[in-house]
Image 1 (cartoon, rainbow, N blue to C red):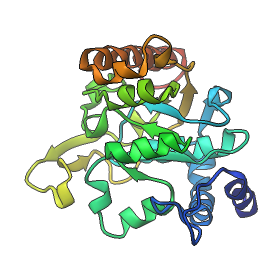
Image 2 (tube, rainbow, N blue to C red):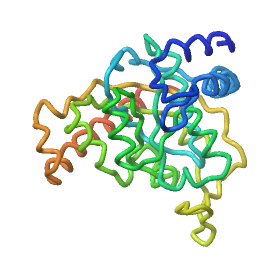
Image 3 (cartoon, one colour):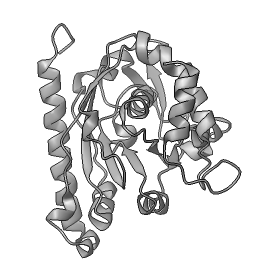
Image 4 (cartoon, rainbow, N blue to C red):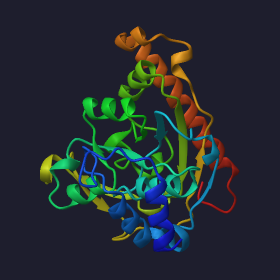
Length: 267
């Protein structure tokens, strides 16, 4: 896709302008369109991203996409967000929820905000859902990229906050399996002595840059957690934990199925 195409997508996508062309979190659609243009060669030719099931993403209203996470830096997150921006009809701007230390990063945090990234405070996610936005969440957090290569495609520590929000606001949850990132940039080691800006660790990769592995993204069927629960159940930690585990099991099965289906890839 060329720059004009991304500019058109950015203009067509719903955008809650709080004044001066930015939303309350700093999203600036023209900046997002420019970043998407620059990243297009990575998406199309370097990682050769293929995806299926994007038609399952709701065309409007609040929704939560929950994906597996891996790689030294969040390249998989970037490819997923680009895929959403390209394939949703009408186009929707994904709102990735970042870890707590990301807003502390100088320069990078401002760029991320212009591209739609939002800090992981609960109030931020709540505001986005109330505004009918499309959230993208990686419940593994930093434990996903920190996993050993031998544990690839096995979900790690699982946060449950997304389930509470899905029940409270009636937002469908779509599991999303991302394959390829585990082999692209695996972690060799990590050090806890260097933790800039509150990061949980400093990563040491096997290779200095991600390898050009073939990415495959599969969107699963929506899970409507609020059909089995009322909004008040969102205050019950046992209900929330069980709902989050239901999504975890669905995502793990989706990842496993896609991994078994691919041919000629690392197993």
